[in-house]
Structures are given as C-alpha cells and as structure tokens.
Length: 330
Image (tube, rainbow, N blue to C red; front, side):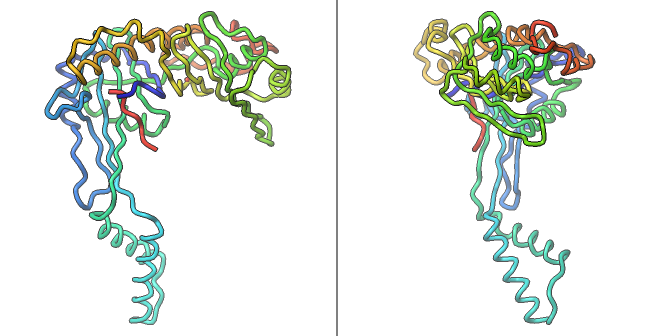
C-alpha cells in the first residue's frame, strides 16, 4: 500500500451536505462493473479497503476515503491498421475500387469490435479523500482529465455535490520566483534541489535543475531574464517533501520519517490496520500542509472571486504582497 503521491485539491461548495451513509448510497449508483468482452472502457467506485462487498465510503478519524476504478482495453494501433489494410485490399481485389475514408473508418470500428475480446486490460485506481469539516476534496492524480472524470462521477452520484478548484491569491509562479530570487521560502518550508524554469517569450526555452543547489546566481539571472518557475521541489516542516507546480498541483509527495512517529500503533489486524494507519498519516499531514501552503500563497481565493492579475506583484514578484496508472493509496 502506498499513500497519496500527486494531488489536485478542490473546495466543496457550502450548499452540499450529506452524511456518510448518503454518500455510500450515492456511490452505489456508480459502482464499478468490469468491461464486457466488446467494451473498451469501464469506470466506477470500488471498495477502498479492497474487501469485496465492503463499504464504498470509509471513514478514518472523520476523514472520508473513496476509490475510483478505471478499466481500459487497448489494442496495438499497428495491429488494427494492418487488419484494416488487409480488408481494404480484399475489397479492392473483389470490387475493383478502393474504400474511401468513411468506409475505412467503418472497417476500423469493425476490426476494433472483433479484437476487443482479445485485448489486454489495464486498471487505474484513483484514491479520493473528502474532508467534510474543512469542505475539501482531494483527488490522487496528476492528470487533470482523470481528476475531472472523478469529479464528474461524484457529481452524478451525490445529490447537490459541487466543487471548484482551489485557487490562491498569489500565482504560484510569482511566489516561486520570489522564493528563489530571495532564497527566503515561507515560514515552515524549505527549498529543495529540483526546479523547472520556462521562458514566456516565443523561444519557450526551458531550464531544469535536478539534484542541484538552487541558491545560485544563475537561477536568479534566469528569473530576472523573464523565465518563470513551473515547478519547484520543497519540504514542509521536515515532514513532507513535494513539488509545487504553477497550476497549484502538489506532486511527488513523500511522507518523511518523522511522520511515522504519529502513526496509530499497530493492533495486529494486518492490512486493515495498515489502511487506517496510512490513511491517518496521509490525511493528517496533507490536512495541515495544504492550508499552510495556501497561506504562503496569500491565502485561498474565495469561490466566485476573480483571480488577481499576474502583474500585481512588484518587480521582485513578492509573494508577500500580492498546486502509467494512478497509484491507489488505500
């Protein structure tokens, strides 16, 4: 079992209010059903603990944990193309005419339908965390399209459910520029040794640093020349290391050794105990990191509020003035 690795954070609108039992009933309407032989994709909610016929919504220390499953069947494009070409050649040989675009498209659909029962399947498991007290939704994904799919399923499953992406008063890129230029990260955070800077002009030049000190003149010069940080590795409170992106995603999350000291003591229940302990660590640490990170970015922007202009920061972009398959954590 792993923990949250990459997260996208949403604010749950105040109009939504359901109990855990109501959430369970709602998720059951979108329960995962495996692909049929001729079906390309199936998606839905599964048991977070992995226990068949168990709850779809688990509560650990007041935090609600869900899991979304996606099953897809993929066929090698070269195989499909070869089959289509063979059938097109047969048609030409028997009728004397070449199939047009429309007919080739129909042939491709026909071949795909016939081959799907033989295709290999892939599974992606996406962990989802609802903090009902803080009205926060966290999706374990770095893929915006996949996160949108999860949110769409929640909206379909839960009456009145509505969310919006969490946004900050200060642009992450502007804040990261200031932290790198001044080498003064916000209180409780340190700057690590990975960063990506990207030019905003037509050159689109990119500079990446990996396992490299960032408190050097070269980094400041790139920023002064107009390059903006798109991602920056940081550590919070010596407990969680992560990468902040210009889109306010939190990626490459690693819970450091000190976090284990606060884990619930093992009770000998095996996997069930591991689930509770890891859930408590992940939600407990991220439940503190996210609001502190937002504070470092000038605070969370309220729903319906227009974003501050990127140029609002002074010349130094001062943050003081102005986030192969998904890994299932549970």
